Image (cartoon, rainbow, N blue to C red; front, side):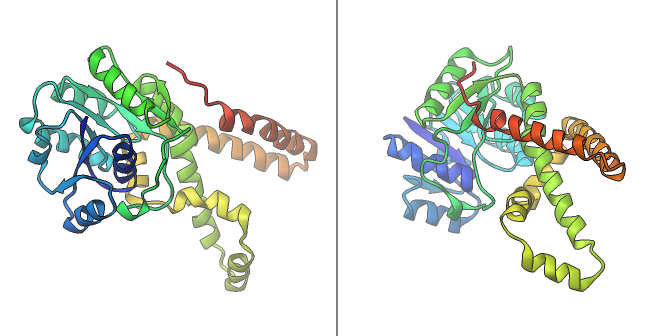
Length: 285
């Protein structure tokens, strides 16, 4: 199968590598000539170009650009394509994308690979990045069944764990486990930097170890991507932030009132529940 990838960053490059290992021909498109050269040299793509017209003969195209560029990219891309070509995306927000993209191109399938790291760019690609990781497809009543089936089959070949759900349910879910943690992590760093005693701040930096590393990591990723999470998933993110703020207020109250048993109960509940979020990976259609 000849597959196109627009945006050869972490996700696009990782897709390209894995798909080539499965015997597919991969054509990559990037605005940066250096990115194109690296992708070709590293074996991520068979061919690369800065011209969307180079994807004219591909069968499935993955749009792996930032969220804000997905719809404009589809608008520029579709005049070059055969009507049977399938387009899917890798954006972390679906409600702002899927309906409008489907109106632009009948064979569009919303997608979101739940994989990655704090790095970005073609040099951050990982071999086997999607294996045993959730990959969400978000069909609607307007989604062409044949297009959905083709994308589903291709994604499963990457050994990803495939889920089907609506764009709204996707956005509300990722607000909890992806977008909220980014904002909480960023707020943690901001609070630490607000320490007014320079000696205390210096010691905090020196003492920082695995706990701080774990809780601050997701807020240290691509700032533009984090901003787009807030911009394009505003309603769901705000709802999760409001509820998180309520829980913080409850915790502050417990500490002020010296309700140590309640705090212990909260931590025990967290300890028991965490595994459900990390180990619940059964396929769900």
